[in-house]
Image (cartoon, rainbow, N blue to C red; front, side):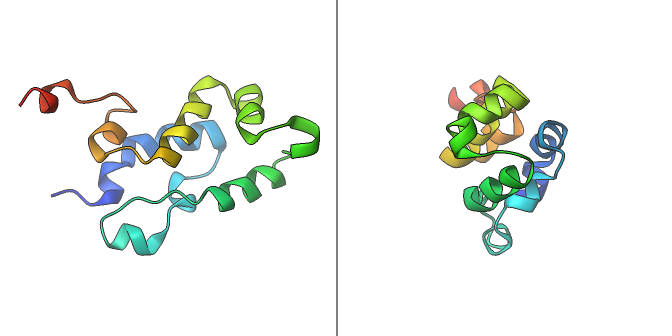
Length: 102
């Protein structure tokens, strides 16, 4: 059985390309040790503020990400907040049709 880190490896690469920092920087280590993924949106918000985001200037964080990093980056964050099942994370947000048909 794969660990959480192994399951999100491909997803982490895309996240790092979009935001310049590893996804694991925003994951809760305790949850990962328990085999669960938990995205720390507060830590991510602080990171984005250090990178130039301002709610007063840019509106919502979602809007800022869409403008500065593109639609896929916005989808990453939405998926992380909603908590994708591991097979969706592995497939970049796409459901594994084969596993649904079993």
